[in-house]
Length: 397
Image (cartoon, rainbow, N blue to C red):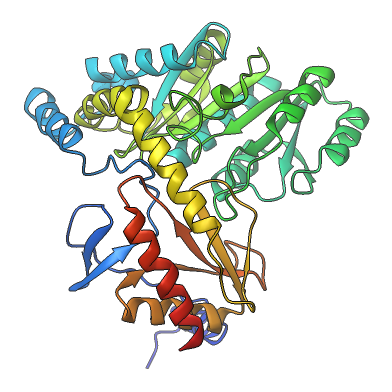
């Protein structure tokens, strides 16, 4: 008999099952790469965010091992106690140098995760405004941005996806001293790109900050992988930039880059940064190698190969009952719609040896359940050809 305290949870879990929304974890037994072993099954995976294939790159692995030998396994404390190591400093300096062409007096701050970085930057912005702040949030923003806005306790105005006209009208009507526009650059579930140039122009016109979450752009976009700002050749004092280091960079953590004064304010007031143990310094040491690969000739070649794979898959036909999102990034979702149908499609693909996750509400809007297919520079053209065939077989099975 279920304990009385657990009965409400049991009822809710039953309801989740009924809606086809139960989340499940699978256990990966091999490194993050296209060919993996998952729960004992060999699969060809198309669902990680390892866009450049650096997670298992021999040089990055070697650098991580070297980092452990130099600094040990953990940091032992928060950055402001005794957990800020030389590798953290070098990583932040390297990131600042990469972003300096796009941010005035650029400085970077390293976080354990992208989620914490977004919580940290938004809470610091709210603290600086002392309550007189309005955040304008893009409708399809990532959960970490939404939760960061909630933590900030700022007034919030939601604007429709990529609708710069609606945003401009809202900014014009706003009387808050501090205004912040918050958006993903590449939307994680659709793969489309925000109208960043127009958003920045509006922010400059109305004296607002533009907080860009470039989690899925950093390392992939731009001639040297510096992200959306390099891709669009943008520079402005109104920018605050967040990038993650566990996706295209292949390791872990995230960073916020902005003017030195703002980053110093974050060190003083960003609670998610101040009150947590620093990420292991070995990770920061490995990231130095990862960033060198991203910005060097190998990174350029991997981005070019990834672009070819994107074009290959985007030009392939899919079943008529399914639909695509217009995406030119490594995120290539196929919309199926119904929860039961997308779960069935994912299971059929697993049976063929392909691992592609079924994404459902609340991660995406109700009725837009999808297969979130992601491509990596570690994939081959033959891998993508196999995927196209498997998707067709899945629909007709």
